[in-house]
Amino acid sequence: MAQADSPNKTGRPTKLTEEIIKKAENYIAGDWMTLGHVMPSAVGLAKVIGVSKKTIYNWADNNDEFLHILAELNTEQEFTLLNNGLTGEFNTAITKLVLTKHDYSDKVSQDVTSSDGSMKPVVVELVGVTNESSKDE
Image: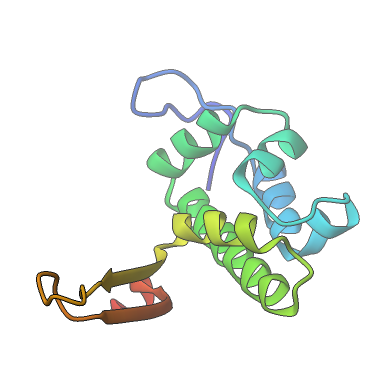
């Protein structure tokens, strides 16, 4: 459990408290929607608890409980992006861009053949969006 006087790796006291952890858990549980956020995010959480995004990541590096909270936040963000991207509620290009942060990718490759045969045969490979991290689990 985080305490206001617990030192972090640099020796300074952390500002991470049980109250902040509770706010973070509530944010992930749905407060992000009631606050008008389009999707949950680390920067949104940082705004809600009044710290920088860098502090959010520092806390995750130094505190297993907050690391778990950040992992839940990323899962909620991925889920929201997938659902709203599939329904068309979110802009496709932005959804695709943000999903790359969750290890999704798409790949298109193409070879072209010329009439005199000097170029390679046409091969078009379309690979859909995949979640590389889910293969590890």
